[in-house]
Amino acid sequence: MRNRATTPLSKAKIRQSWSKYNLFNLSRFRAPPTASRTFFQQKWTAKSVARAYHGEQVRESQWARMFTRRIRSVVPMSPKKLASDDGSAMSAGRGAGLESEGNGDDTAGAKDQTSLTPFTQMTFAPLERRLDVAIFRAMFASSTRQARQFVVHGAVTVNGKKMRYPGYLLNPGDLFQVEPERVMYATGAPKDKFERRESRVARRKSAESNEGETEAEGAAAETEDKKDESETTAAQDQQKDDPKETLKTLLTQAKTIMSSNKDVLPAKRKQELRGFQKAVRRVLSRSESSTVLADNLESQFSELITLLKAKKAEKKKGGKESEETSSTPAEQTSTTAPESTDATTTTTATSAAENQPSDKLSEAFQKAAQNPDEEVDTSELTEEEFEVLRRALIQMRDNPIDHSKPYATPWRPRDYMSAFAFIPRYLEVNHNICAAVYLRHPVARPGRTEVPTPFNENISTAAFAWYLRRR
Image (cartoon, rainbow, N blue to C red; front, side, top):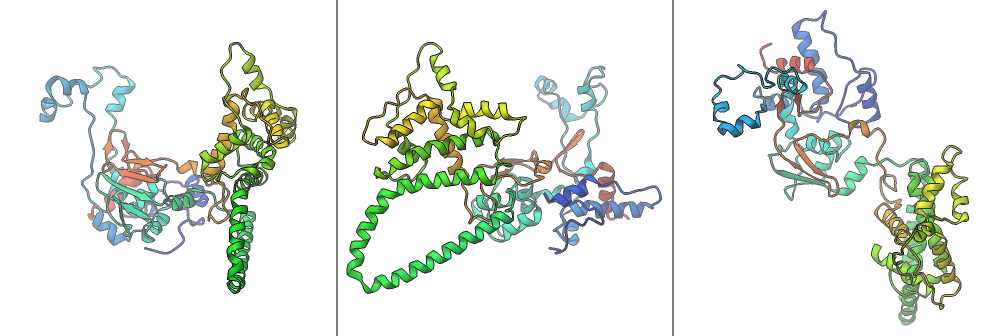
C-alpha cells in the first residue's frame, strides 16, 4: 500500500474518506478541461482523477489485473409480458424495440425506461468486492485505509472466521463482521482536549490506586491472621454500600453529561437526565439499608421501585389522571428555565413537563428518605412517571461515560458524517451487531449505477478507455 498524504489541499483529490478536508475538496472539485488536450491526455487525466478515489490503496499493476471490460448490467422487463407468455418471447429477442413500453404516452415512466444505461460508471466495480472497500461502504470505518487497518489487526471476520487479508474478494452471500468497539471508534467523535485531560487524570489515579493496592498487599502478608477478619467485615460493608455506590455513579454520570456536553445532547434528553438526578438524589439516603446488588439495568430499576414501595396506578375514568400527570413542580421548571435561551424557554418547559417526574413522585421520594420504615403510598403514580426513570437508566447504561475509551463518551457521531452516510444496494447492513452481507455483485441499470462515485460519466468513460489498452 502506498503510504502518503491522502487529502492534499493544493491539488484537490477526492478520496474514500470522511475527512473534513476531503469534503472540502469534494465541494470545490471541477471536471478537468478537455478543449485543449489530446485524447491521450484526456484519458490519462481522467484515469488519475478516478484512481485517486477508487482503490487508492491498491497498486496500479494489481488493479490492471482486476480490470475487466465485461460489465454486469440488468434490463428491466415488464411483469405483464413476463406473466402472459412466461418470458419466452422476451428472452428470444424477436421484435424488441418495435413498440414502446409506454404505448405512445410521453410519461415519466416511459422516459425512465428509455434512458441509457451508464455502463462506463461500472469501470471500478471489481474493487467493490474487496473486503476493505466493503467495510467502508457499510459505514464500519471512516476510510478504506482505516478499514484495511481493522482487517490487518484481526478485528474483522468473514463467515465467522478471522480474515487478515484486506484484498479478499467477497462472494455473493458472504457475511463480514467488525468488532463493535472498532466501529464506535471509527464512526464516533474524537475526544477534545478537556476529555483527553480527564482520561489522563483517570489513568493516573488508577495507577496510583494500583500502587497502593500492591503496598497494602505486602503489608497484609505479614499479618495473615488479621487479614481474614478484615476481609469478612469489608465484605459485609461492601455488600451494604454497593447499591448506594451504583446510584451515586449514575448520578455523577448524569451531572457530567449535563455540565460538559450541553451543546451535543438534545433538549429532550437533558430534561430526562435532570428529572433522574432529582429522583436519585432523594432516594440516595435510603439506599444504605438495602442489600440487593444492582448488577444490570432491570435490577437497578427494581431497586428504585423497591425502595419507594411503588406500584403502578390503575386507569381511572375521566380526565383527572391526565391533569395530574401533566403538572410539574415549580422547582424543576425553575432549574430548566435559566439554562435555555429566551427563544426556547417555552419549548424547554413543555418538554420538562412531559419527561420529568411529577409532584407525587417527588413527594414519594421525600417521604421515603425522611421515614425509611414508614409505608409510602405510591399507588397514584402513572406509567409515564415510571418510564422517566427507566428511560434515564437505559440512556446512561447503553451510552455511559467511560474515560478509558479512545473516543468521546457518551458516544456521538463524528462531524461531517451526514455527507457520506449512504449504503449501496448490494449490501445488507445491520449496525446493531456491526455485520453486513454482500448480497450480489453491483450491476448497472437504465439511468443508474450501483457503484458509488463522485464523478460524472465523461470521466468514467475516459478512464474506461484508458484501461482498454488500445491507446
